[in-house]
Each structure stands twice: as structure tokens, then as C-alpha cells.
Length: 164
Image (tube, rainbow, N blue to C red):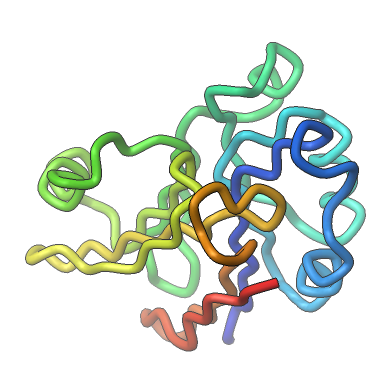
């Protein structure tokens, strides 16, 4: 059965926005699983997203003790045969693929945040790396962004970067 995912990160609420954009809330309602790769900043963002569906999330470097008590540093789940891991920070982009392939050898897709820069690459070993950017803090990017994707029958399909 196909599983529709919403992938967001680095919401930084209330520092960068007062609340999640309406488009993100609509995407959360349409998703079977909401994935947040850290830097929520306020626990209320987690609770807001839980009101829209099931959430798989991790804490980021800007998250306090309240979120760290509720969320892991690394989350793992197998979805329709695809081994997924979520982490906030992966370090320098120049050697990211090599380091993450070594750190996550039993993972098919690694979802991450921190940089606010959308990323979609596949390592030589087959590990897919996805970063949705940020729906609330675009930094040096032209638009705020998030990702949607479908996992079905052991494959990742329909990865779409959505610009707000």
C-alpha cells in the first residue's frame, strides 16, 4: 500500500514564523506520515502537527529539553520495505554522501535538515539523501520549501519539492 509522506524541517517557530503555513497544514492532512527533521523550537509545533496525523520526528540543535525529552536524535522506521532514517544535522555538504553512507549502511533513505537547503542525491551505495529546506526560513534560498514523496512496494516515488 502506498504511503504518502510530508517531509519538513527547520520550522523555527516562533522565531521565523508565528505558525506553520496553511499549505504545510494542508499537506500534513493529505499525508499518511508527517516527518520533521528537527529545529521545531516550540513544542507546540509538534502538537500542532500531531493534530494533522502521525508524526515521525527528531530534535535539532535549536530544540530545548522539552522536545529532546519527547523526540530522539535519530528516528528509524521501515515503510513498505524501505528503511528510513531521520536526523537533523549531517555536517559539511562536500563529503556528506560518503560520510552518511558509512554512518547509515542499513538505510535506504536518510531525511535530514539543518542547512535549510533542499537536497536530493543518491550515494554510490544507493543511499538516498533528502532535505526539504524550510517552509518558514528560506535563508539563502529563493523560496520556502518542503517535500512530499510516496513510498510503495519497496520504492521511493514521486519526490516533489514544493516551493511556497
